[in-house]
Length: 308
Image 1 (cartoon, rainbow, N blue to C red):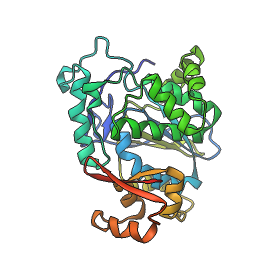
Image 2: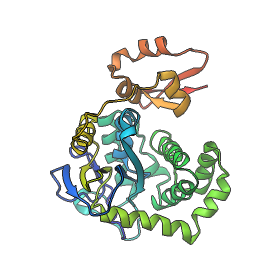
Image 3: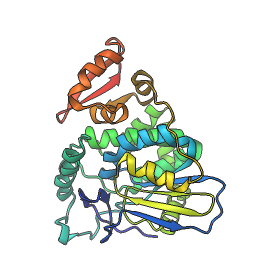
């Protein structure tokens, strides 16, 4: 499959990419491949702004209900390159046209998105960091997901071009792997083959826009949820696939535990995870954290908290 370039991210549907004219963002489907348990397929892309907007909800959903499913993260291929690309109907004919759409998503979701990278140092292709993800995933799914998170922080909040070798090497080093070696591997044919295997599975799942989550149970019944949706949407879908039992959430981590794991969190993520209002955040941080261990900064009008 050769994914279609489409950089528009729709605020109403919460979809990045060629979502078409879909108005039904939750659809029940049948699959013929036998399953031993519930499998969750998360179709995403490193430069998908609505995937970044989904992070607060997706983290809480996985932490509370992940014991009911096996999660598989698939790369979707949002932007192969800019050669000959033009989306005139959506006002996009060059990388600079993406910045305004990203800012809208950031303002709507409150997940910080700078977007000026599209003016100053535009991303050549999302396939480049996607191949790095696939190389790391062969070694460890957990490390691959950590890489994806760090890459998105650098891109959306801190305006780094995550298609450049030096940026990618630094991110991979932070994850605890050999950045230079991983980037070299990502340029080999095997990495491209692995990426296109994801594209093939994405096509078989009937996914056209990102983020999309597909859940399939052992009776080969599934639900496809398109776009960035609410926590209730995902829990309701999971319950539909587990009719013989009532899904029960696990106890969430404390803020201290969560920050030790994630290293950096934005205010919107903490509010979602702990179900607190924006104006209660400061008091919550003072109550839950030692000032010696963490520091609070702000970017684009939103706070972020990180381990010192």
